[in-house]
Length: 124
Image (cartoon, rainbow, N blue to C red; front, side):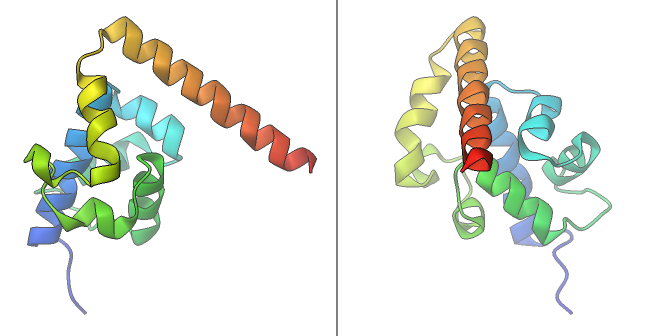
């Protein structure tokens, strides 16, 4: 069985997860709450030398949290801004210009929106 641990894909995943979180100005704890992935797991996944192979289910949850597919999350190293998937590059660049207060307000609004949509789908 192929191992993900310390592979190029593992390093790329770690860098991309950390890059995306940093661009949003969010903590690992905030991403954990938003994605449903344990904060310690996120910490391990953001460390390219982490001691535990990431589970595909957690990779899928984090990709979804960032609005990407798993293949989009692994396709390129986002450290090169040209590599960010085209549908996301504009908003990531826009977010990087926001103040910490503006980012927090945007995150709060997005969380309220997501909670509202979740509640509406349960009522259908």
